[in-house]
Structures are given as structure tokens and as C-alpha cells.
Image (tube, rainbow, N blue to C red; front, top):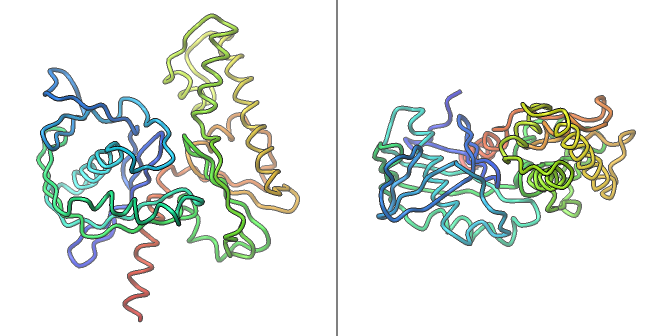
Length: 309
């Protein structure tokens, strides 16, 4: 499926992660560097309002409110451009379906919507292609939850969702297919915390300063192109991190004998590679774009409900 078109408007789900931006068809790092003049050598450059932004060379710094600076607005334009390029178009009326961490949703939903809709019409260039868009609507949904909402009616008994991103872990308890609004939690326990610990441990024990890309490859794939000594240190720290994840979930009454755990987000591969868990009671959702797709599905559900009404 290439996506949804509603009365000539293109629906684009965007998962604004601290590590990666995700849409239905694309994934790229949530990095933005701003320059006042055009760069001689650079790729993935977005030109907007007289400034030049290099996209995706690093990660976004953790901020508790995603509309504190222009970073996520610029990343949103890049995500839209990538989705339009997938469709071979450069002009469109756009509907955005996005999300926020569970515990931040009620307080930040309107502010994030206003932030993304601050300009109804936008002209910019990305990768030397000119784009003209109209942002016609923005809907904000619970992060992580969107990635499993289609399956929730099938959930019998007690289930737990752990959305492990780069900056935070969002946890939600689900009972008989119903999300429990009084049992949702947000912890600053994202994958980047593990990356920092590995970096510090390698520096302390091996006297080396590993590039973060090496650590990220290791966490993603379970190995990396480096010495056995450094691999051993990274392995130890990664295993410690997964233990901490399950300890935190236990605080929220996760019991593998009674609770089915669903892990979504970039941290899923880290749990798969380094965690100790019962595969019968833990589902790791490998599609990193699942939440962005879920936002689109939630938007479409609301459209159908309005039509039915």
C-alpha cells in the first residue's frame, strides 16, 4: 500500500523520534544542522526561509517538549518531501498524523499541532527539488500505542506495550483489549542511554573513543567490525541495559507468566540481541515504521467514524 488519499489530500504519518524520523516508506536520523549560506559539499540539504539545513547526520538532542525549537518542524518538512518524492510529486495538500509520548499527550497535543501548522502553505527545497505544500490538518495520537492498536481487539487478558525509542521508553498496560489510562508511564530510558554507557565503558576500560555509529551498528546487529576486547565491553553494557529495561517493566507489574509483552521501537533489536526473556510471552515488533503507519490508520478510522455519523 502506498498510503491514503482523502479527497485529493495526501495523508502522511510521521513518527518524530529522537533517534530517527519514520514515515510509511522512509527512515532517517533526526539530525538537523543549520547554516546561513549554501554548503559547497553536503547531501540531504533542506533550504527554507533563507537558511540551509543538513538533515540526518546526527540525532536530535532529547527535549521534553518537541516544539521548543525549529528542529522538528524542519525534520517534518524533510519527511513530507521524502514521502512526496516516493509518489513522484512536489506539490500537495497534506494531512499529517503524528504522535507524542503517552504521558505528554494531554498537555502537549494542541501545542504540537499548532507548531506543525504554524504555516498553512510552505515553499522549500530538499535535495535540490522544490516543494510547495499546504498543511491542511494535523492529528496527534499516542506514540507506540498506534503501532499495535489494530491488534488490540485480539488481546485477551493482561498485555503490556513497551515503546523503546532513542530518548524514552513509553509503557502502557492493556487489559482485555482496553488501554488502561491510569497505567501508562514515560521513562528517560531510551536506546541513547545505552549508547552513552557503552561509550563511557569503552573509554574507561579500553582507552578508546568509539564513534556512535559503531555502537549503534553493534546494538542493531549484535556485532560490529572492531576488536574482541571492545566487543566484550559493549556486550556487557548492552546486557546490563536490557536487565534495567526488564527491571523497570517489573516495577509496572510485568510478570512473564501472566502478562504478554509487546516491544515496539528501535530498542526492540537491542532486546532481541542482548536480552534474556521468554519468547512465548514477548513479541518484538520489527517494523520500525509501524507507529507511523498506525497514525495513518487511526486518522482513517476517525474519518470513517465521521462519515458514519
